[in-house]
Image (cartoon, rainbow, N blue to C red):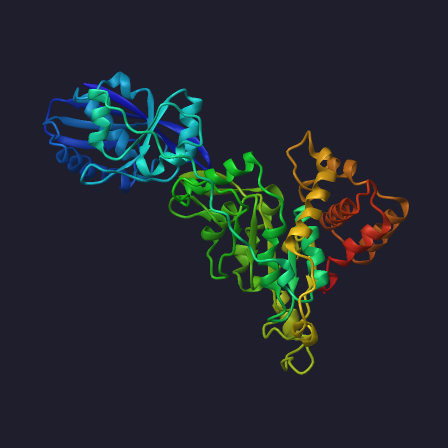
Length: 502
């Protein structure tokens, strides 16, 4: 009496098919689960026992062995409950083993036999589709699975409903209609008074996907500017929506089956730990940088973050992914995020403001900036000062452009550069590197001379040198120029904030 079912395990956002084998043999009654199962799976024995009792069945007086294959892969999560109990019912000859072999199944069992939501339904549905199998999932997550063309799709409310389907061929209603993610309304840039230079830099960051650091005293509007950047970013493509939604599904953050249809904006507190920010922990879950994939990661009060935590961002800022290595797992998550950071010029925040500086100025500013390493700052393309707003501007009526107008310019500039990225996996200038950057960033002779002199004077690293070229390429796109001119290099250099190096 041997029966099998299929479920999945997650390695990052990739899925690994897991075969659940249940065997009933003569001997002393026992219920054993093998195959490197964690505590949550070991506890499924009691959930399975109670769920069977809720429908009038009892565990057979046999030695029950459950094997999760491949046995050398660590398994974790409560979604193994459903494949275990269905394989057990097949071994007990209550359901046809051939029928249940045509499905990938995931779900947590309640003591009353209900099937409860679990994480990772969307990537599991994609695995089922690629394997030409159907999917069995909790009823609450049927709409999430319906975004993938998987058939048949059984979104069951409880174990009894599944038994009626397999025994009596009673149809399970199809999931409700697909729902788009809720539209998030971001505040408008026109509400910010003054700070025209900062608004210009936000537009450059939106066009080229560049990282940005804003430095200024408290109340100068740094957080307000950052929170309005999503309002001028281009919309997500269908592939980006699916990729982001898979990450959020594994993290258990998709609600009511709605996909993520707008660019994420993640703003963790400066007390966030390294696993919370980059991912990992006991279950190797995605961190804030992965939840911000194809979106924005906003770090306010940047020097207040743990330095080791910030240094962990250096690799994903370059590669666009993060590899979490543990003794029992090596997991890679996508992390192609846009870093927007804000900080005060010093600990008290008023360095350079007459009448407000503390007695330790300017030393306090140097010590505060020393919390950020040179290699970390070198990865931030745009570094600008955001001074306090003039009281006369605060008292006046806002006169700035709306986010709608600025967004149209962003879309036009992106459309101008779109053709150069057709045969690559690059979507914006900030991702261009190496030979490809040389091909798309042609400098006029005067621009090249200016860049060489600046690189020598300010001791630019090779990374900093190329980041200036990327920003200049973006500025050239905004003026619809195929060639990078001297004024484009000049403006790009002005946003490097070389005082940070002193």
